[in-house]
Image 1 (spheres, rainbow, N blue to C red):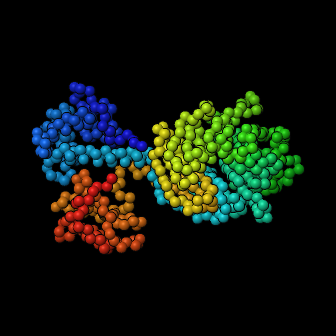
Image 2 (image 1 turned 45 degrees about the horizontal axis):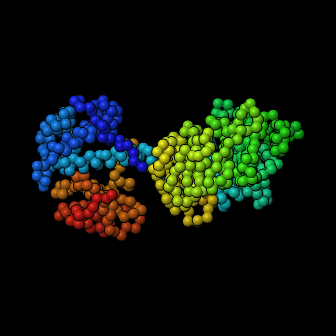
Image 3 (image 1 turned 60 degrees about the vertical axis):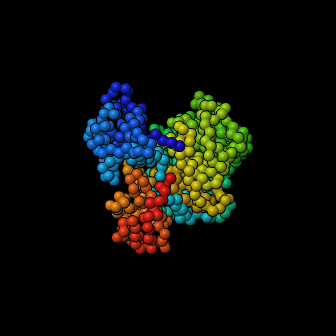
Length: 572
């Protein structure tokens, strides 16, 4: 994908104008700084400058001194002061030869455009630190990762019922089984977990067709306050939403293996999720058992049930409630009724149903309320973008994955989309242009048979990817401002060669061979020195020999003759 350069060749002023200032040119400096002359030159201006350097003979090269350049440019271009063209000349003549030609000028402009293009990309495409596997104690598949805003902690839960509590720095603080009944854990699995953030609780679903609600405010292990029993199918996915303006209003939606999508709509969540039976113990630590039939009958006045069975027996893989649509969205891997939207109509209790079909089905979806788009992770290797009100066909198709897409999630702040495929390729998409702007292919896990969990914590810039019982993290690098770095690692030495008019720069990358960069005017040569480097911290010194055409790299057994370096090609 190509981005608009921060340093852009604008279309320039109209004929007869003396200066392009105020005509919409794009400058790279801060708004309070005056625009640089080279940032205001348009294509027409460069054509005029080129004509001044055109020789009368084919083999001739026209060079200009500083005074000549200042005089001729003010006359030929028709705007700008001599002082501005003098400053422009000094930037082009980095070797201080006292003259420039057309090649030097265009090389300078290309490098400036490249640097600003890199700067513009850095603000659009996130930069990531190295992928890191976090030390966990989970022995089975990790089912969910959630962040608790109230306590700035992460929670992870695995299939065997082990709950992990992590600090904001991702240090594992403690682990404990989610239920104290150790014998029961052998006969059930945890399928999902959600955070009830407005009331400081979590809900955990089990294969025993139960949903248990745990209090997070208790010290030590989290006690179970409510146990919802009697569900007709095993819940395998859950999602929770609450109204930030009225925290009493909240919805717990879940889907099961029979194809049912169900939602508990709480109306007094801050007071109580369910009504306590008359014979319940006064002890607040005691677990209150709630039967699903009681909720269906309307016995509990503080909540009511919404449900549908449009998936017709297919496992519901994902479910969520969208407040902006006022609809429950759910999906399966079937190609019929793949994604179902159950619209709430407050005047009528039955849900209004719409659905769209996706060839071969999908693994997951995500909804962006501001863009009003649903992204689906297709089993057919495609990521589709849907308007929830148009079910006939997608409004966009993102091509690029060569394996089944297993996860999608919007990067809401940047209007971008993550997608992750079965072959462990992560892509970032620009939604507006529907193009892939980043591809990361890493050997996250050597196993080809794995269950994957994908979760992007946008607030902290952390991307979590789990492979069975392993949990990995990709962390975004912090914004480094507008400066473009020439090296990824620390620069260890800088020397100027007055004979060759070069700046020799060395940097140290402990993961690879030592690298050197030779800067000739508008030419960069990357040299990897041959050495016996053994991944150990050490001092690295670079020096010029008595013959300035030779560089000596100390402590690395590297001896580099520059005669051969001058014939090297610049990196692409």
